[in-house]
Length: 180
Length: 180
DNA sequence: TATTGTTATACTCTATAACTATA
DNA sequence: TATAGTTATAGAGTATAACAATA
Picture 1: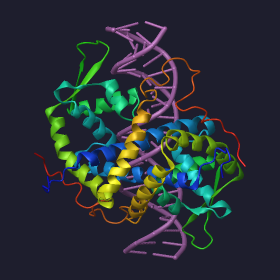
Picture 2: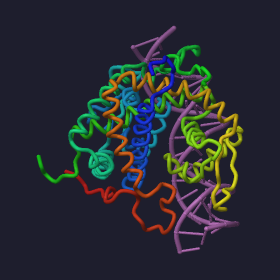
Picture 3: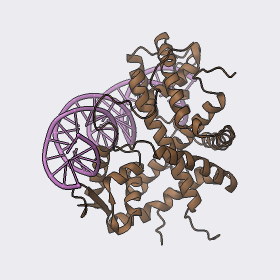
Picture 4: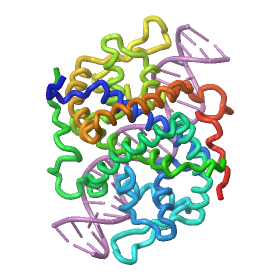
């Protein structure tokens, strides 16, 4: 107790496992559900959601990438898939010629309308129906706070773009200190 | 207000986004960290952890699959990768000739010892250092509870093994009801 | 020089279903 | 017949770095 070991407490281990597994189980189910109902993967659907959120204004590719856990080349690939299906349109940004604005099409909006209810009710059944409203608020507040702090860290899209000698993300986490 | 729509509340949406993104961001960072430090993906490392937990007794393949979000063929593939690297050994179960016991090797144990500290401190820095102990306990209790309930559902390894006409996982979640 | 986005290649992983063997 | 595990194949996705264009 109180030793400066890098070891994790049993509580923390359980917390991490709970977060990890709960999120994965629900994401897996949502992925299956979306493939069946609208023919998109969860990743694609989430991308379409982010683009759709912006309405007719569209959204810069980098902004979409930063809102999600996708690399830029990964986003290019996935948006390409969405474009092939006619769900999204890309055009150069008027103000910054380097940027590309992704915009949802009417067909994309239709797909969103078709897919959201199933997605939502799945998440509701798997997650929210098992929580009291008070618990929901608690978890939300706490996790939302963590998320905001995480988002302030170096952006994924900027990640490792310059030199090769910079350490990734968090500090000394990759030092394999050997263990007792 | 009180309408029977399948729509999700703003609170719920935020909760889901927080869970989804937080978990993904940390998992992504952990994956990078583990690739660098021990040359395994997060998925492989988690599998090795589960096998290692069982010590010299080893663990049935199906039990490992059920503990994680992996299909059986996926597990076969990943355990194959671990076996190639000499981190794991497979042998038929003595009591049930159909089953296979996966057992960690000394090299596997070494790798776990080398990788865990970095993994742990990354998760600690990204997640737990941002939470009070009280918050940690709250989130753990709530999510752990959800997780247990989810685990009581039909197992992933049994999933869709028999006929083809059965609905997947949760109930009527794939009905795209059309929306206003 | 830094940023935005795309591309090309190779590689890893997953999905699906068929298959063997034991219970 | 149901369960445990493997395999084969095809396709989807990712990582990396190089690339072009604009700021």
